[in-house]
Amino acid sequence: MLYRVVAVLATCGAAVAAPTGALEPSPAGVIAPSDDAMAFSASHAESACKCHVDKKSKFVFYNRVPKCGSTTMVSMMDHLAQAKGDFQGKRWTGFTFVQSPDFDAAHFSPEYETRKKIVKEMKGHASQLEKVTVHEGKALFERHIHFIDFDEFKTENPVYMNVLRDPADLRASGYYFFRDCVCNQVPAHGDDFADEWCKADWHRKSKEFCSTDINTCYTDLDKCSKLGMSLGGSELTDFICGATSADCNDPGEGIKKLEFTSKDAKRIKWSEKFEVKVNRAIANVHSKYRWVGLLDYLEDSLSLLKHMLPEYFGKMDPKKWGNMDVAPDGSDGAATHAYAKPNAMTKNYMMSDPYFQMEMKLFNYAKHTLACKMQACGLKPVSDFRVVSAGSRDLEVDADKMVRRVANHTAP
Image (cartoon, rainbow, N blue to C red; front, side):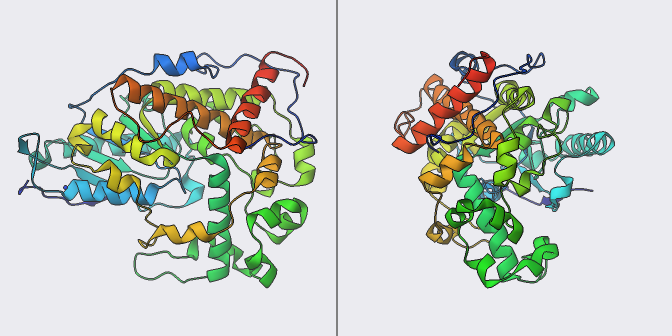
């Protein structure tokens, strides 16, 4: 069994302009995306802006992206599953919360037979839990895993949900998470794996390694890569695009994403493969996910979630949970905010990486969809989605310009 159940009884009522010298994506060799993969545009987001309030679903799946507030989300779900009292004039029944103990990154993108097994086990488990009358048959599963399309096995998809994050902040978070794991080397204790997950890299610990922040790293990527730092990647696109479609294969043609260097940046160009992958991810947000929140607008995201899935999240306080930061060890995650954030120069360099361009394109689409769905549901946001910092706005504009330039076969 790949999951453990949190037994619950509720009987008592649970970003940035590319620099002048930045590397531009290649405008040549563009092919059309596959049938399901639509190009990014406001019209697509608007067509997904129906306010779907669901009071009947019994099977919800949060395939959580790492470092995107997932510990806070899981804490909130655990709390709601166990909550007592009433909701809208009737007893709150909570739900069965099924948590996966598998945090191994090697298992994030399962092969066909493993996907088949996962779908069979999850569907069977969900069917069994429908008989748990105390929760009215409702179950919520969570796991770090790339999107699996249950349709591949002639099975109805669960209600999919996820949370994304500003790509520059995500890279920084992942960078410090890996650096601190190598430098702290806290051994496993009890059910807590602590820093054992990066034990194979503990030998990299040095004074220089542990004192290098993300901006220092990006001033000399070649040196930073040799130190063994975790760089680059496309976590958002990987998780949302998923494990099912060949469109989601690594578009870098053999380049190791976690060893992004100046040399790699000069070699990897935006191409049709990047376009196809991000468009597939956007198509999934459009048609496969019921809700995609943004950590950067978490209170608004949770307000929408509460409205759309009231039988699961109706008792949730968006203001409380939208402003809470729970670290993986259960402590106050706000302490990580003391780390240096990516500055303008670092973000500029990130824009030379087509993996980062994919992330920005997907993030922008998710942000537009979130704002549009809130409007469709008649919810007033506490954030102004139109107001962003000048640097972040430049990054969004540049990302769109780059991918549109490729799609239109125009020169930079």
